[in-house]
Image (tube, rainbow, N blue to C red; front, side):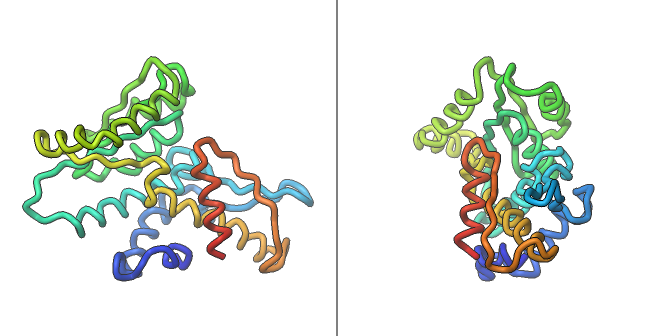
Length: 233
């Protein structure tokens, strides 16, 4: 919580509200009490397990909390008589899609539209997405690759006249849950910092001592979160 508080002003989100959000996101939705435990491989290497969430993806680490940020922002910035529906557009190569669907399944004031490459995800990833039964969820398989899906989403967001038309004619406001969303990126900063603190607590390193971090990353978001964890120490 203290890490998130360094980035979130109490005037924007009271610490007590933030604490409740964190509790809701991580208290029962993860199968390990440590949420993102660090385990020893050998004398030199340690591994942080990020697969204990509801969809067994590291994306759960952020996407169990991001929807709560989203709902809070809507309640604070929108008037009671505003008749707009929020539509979250997501491009996925597999993991993000199911994590977004799981995270937003109870946010009934928000619709979710997922684009994924029809032949570019695993059978398990596809099953997790297409089996989602939320009334506010839509999943579309595209006969192309992930880059096409992502470019399509970015093109839509960059078309201001189209966004305006959606809002004025259909009462729809677009948003995103990919790593371009700060509310998605911020929770990822936490587990990078917690990995370091776990090593300190276990006596592997001393506080302030440098440690190398190897981050598997596709669209730069995961390693960018690690960079923010480093510069905010």
